[in-house]
Image (cartoon, rainbow, N blue to C red; front, side):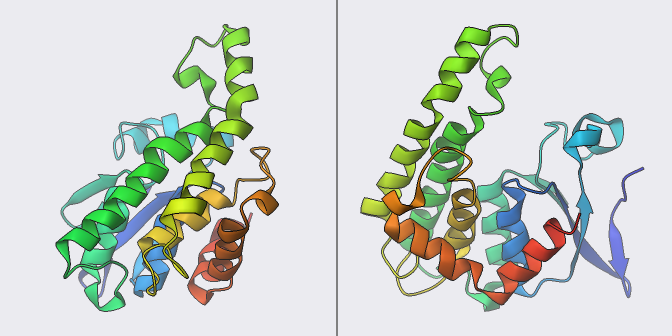
Length: 221
């Protein structure tokens, strides 16, 4: 049985449901960067945990991540990142005092979620879009992955990295999300050398202590 809400000294504690090597890493990093007090629950795809009744009761979508909060469950990475940034404003993970700049952050994260991540997902989750027995369609989708992923990141490389961080001089939730998806470049058939700014960004984000802590948990087993 999966755990429910957690209390620490009578106070509610956030619980992040995650799976290794998924976009859940972005929210995990954000929680670490924010200094949040939280717990994690690992979902193992190999055991089909995401389709078991206990998890579906938490997230009927059957996907990760999911964040159990005092007011309910949040899903979808852009929403979860925005929530963490607003819940811990002292961490300055988003430009919360500038409506336009915050919208720009949301636009960037939405692009990663609905364009870049979708191109990546075509490599191993083609059955979301075509019938499982339509092998020709699935193979065609997989063949397109390197081009689609590269084109998505190329737009980031050329037009979206204000530098040195996504939004300019200040590290934000956008950087955690970009780092997470950039972890998959090689597996998606994209040479990071073709994206030098993205590759350098990935290196610098990976050196942050909060990122290393989140990775240590996710890659523990």
